[in-house]
Image 1 (cartoon, rainbow, N blue to C red):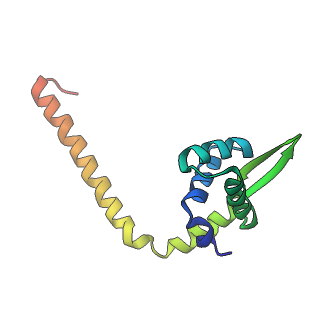
Image 2: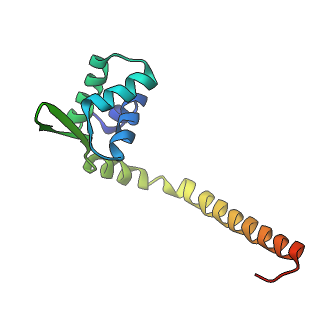
Length: 119
């Protein structure tokens, strides 16, 4: 299965977001996903299987529990693929950063003018 087939599903993307925060039991993942998406435990298990089979998640047994974690290797592949497109949005993000910095400087200058004090 292609990486974007795996990542194209919002449930699987959300599971990866959860796992990015740290290792989680399948029960904990299931509880969050069932609450947010209203899908059954078997459906969540199927999404976890797709993530495992696609290499995006790892699982390790700990007693009766199964702990899931993100495997970053396929994400690096996705990042490398996206790298050829960064030129389309990076200049815009750089320009936004410049405008935000300009706005912060302007607000500080106005605050200094209003108080009459120097920073």
